[in-house]
Image (cartoon, rainbow, N blue to C red):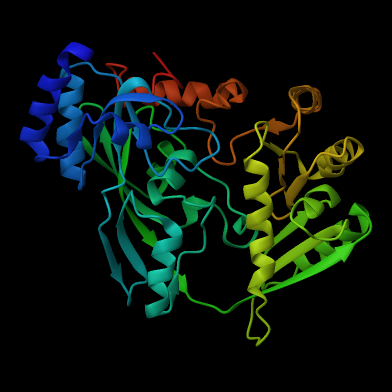
Amino acid sequence: MVGMVSELKEEIEKKIGKGKAIEDWKTCKKYSRYGTCQMLVLPQSTEEAASALSVLNKFRVNVVIRGSGASVGHGGEAANEVILSTSNMQEVRVNRSKRTALIHAGVEISKFNSGLREVNLAFPLEAYRGATFGGLIATNAEDRRQMKFGDITNWVKEIKFVSSRGEIFIFKGKEIKQIIGSEGVAGMIAELKIKLKDLERLTYEMKSFESFEMSFREAKEIGELPQTNYLELLNKNVSRLIGLKSKYHLIVEKEQRSKVINKKYNLYTRVAIDEMRRGKYFVDFHPAKNGLKKIVKYLENRKIPFCASLGNFSIFASPKSKRAFESCIKYAKKNGIKIGGAEGYGAKYRKYMPQKKISKLKTLKALYDPENILNTKLISL
């Protein structure tokens, strides 16, 4: 590809404008957080993304589509390829009366919600810190509030999707399930029409316990209350890691009219997960409801820090060594526990991707990326 970079840049900029195809290695390095890239392309609209992809397809250049780069799965990991970034795709149009919004893929969910407060609306799912709407759809990321609000399919009315040939497709209703979780292997999530809800006052409380059994019993009772949004449990190891006492800490978010907000409790789970994510062996597990206690006991016996999202039975763990990590993986496989996928699989967790998911992605790729240029490190024809 090295010999054609200048020609490729010139043709892309003819289509979408000067300064939107960048070769500067410092800028490219900033966007290729987990790899390397030869060129960065920054469209500002769905139409520009389509034009850029049609050129890249013509040159048969390998492309990685990248959102914020915040997911733990390293979804947008390039290897001397072109990165097509959604970071400049920032248009937002809110319809207050219909409680809907048209939104570009590069918009960060938390920042969008901050702006929505002015019109007393909210989007309930934020997934991981720094997640964009495009990333949320592409990775099918889990959210701790799913216990109350359901998954992303409940909140998306329409998706504009751009194939590797630059064709624009619109998915509505049940059709959107086809491309949710497609991880950039078949095309780009460009625009969404989403549902919004009325803004409610969020309150937080934190309770401490000596044992997992006690905390789990309490969580079960609180989880049945209609105002409960999420339940997060920090084990003793991760509690110590963030400066709390060596106990189990149950953090609860509710929607209710109350003067006691205690936002600092919400921060504890964010800090805990951020702290664990810094570890080299951070991983998420998804046991069946009746298997939760087993894996908790396993992690406890090995003093592995973890945070459990009790609403959707996800566990985020951070083994301290390769040996401990491999032991956790072996245990999960032996007991039929799903590994990875909370923030998509990406290159990091590709080997744990279920065969059913691989087959689905290959089918999508054959339909929308028949030339096999998109995110080939994850799925290739």
